[in-house]
Length: 74
Image (cartoon, rainbow, N blue to C red; front, side, top):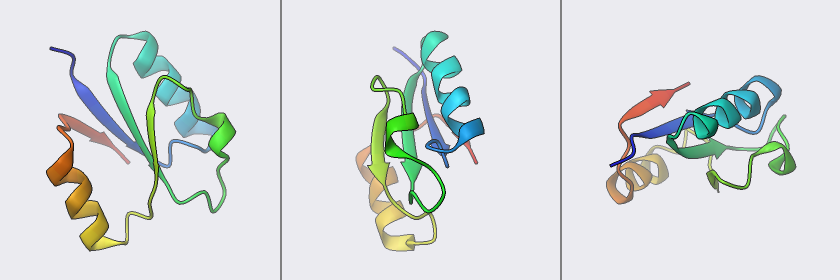
C-alpha cells in the first residue's frame, strides 16, 4: 500500500515542487491550500487537491477523519 502524504501550501512554488517530487517517488499525495498566494494550476493533477485553510479546525478534523494520512509536510 502506498504511503500517503499531506502537503499544506502545496499550490505555492516550493509546495508544488515538493508535491511533484513526492508523486514521482510513488507517494499518494494530498494537497491542502487556501489559494491566498498559491495557484490551483500549480498543483500536479495526480495529487488530490482540496481548497482548505488549515486554520479551519473543524474542516481540517473532518479531512483527517475521511482520509488516511501517514505524514504531513507543512
